[in-house]
Length: 185
Image 1 (cartoon, rainbow, N blue to C red):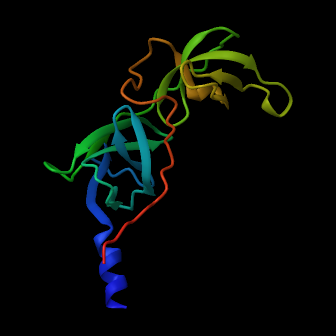
Image 2: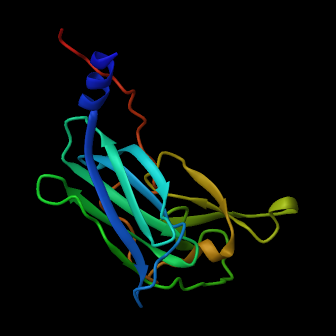
Image 3: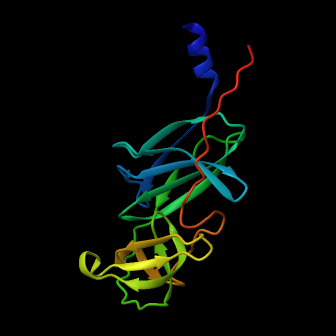
């Protein structure tokens, strides 16, 4: 039993922690935090969690040979924010989030826009929702291999309204890597 415990501990990676606040320093409660392994321009998801009542989060990552992790914070009332953390030099990622600006459109098919699934990405309106999707827009993300989403107008903004994610695949998708552990006995 001790051997199993030691093997489990040996598979754990670095702990990354931080606090998420608004620009006035007030904690952002229940912000969604994604911690992903960085592999070049690709991400491999390791954890997602919510901030606590003081805006704090802490996650122990899987040991996988990586030192680079991307921490992305998302909350419906705020603009998303992200940092790349090199765990050789720091293990803290604090965020001061900007209030979210809401744009209502209107948009038409073919419009080049930014769309937010989790973060703002370059996108294009491909269809306008009907029926149960009345008022929504179908979005295509160029370079995403055909990823399309139906999004509410508040998750769409004009093309030059603000920065978009350019370091990693957009929309936020990660390669699911199987957890493999090899042990030499």
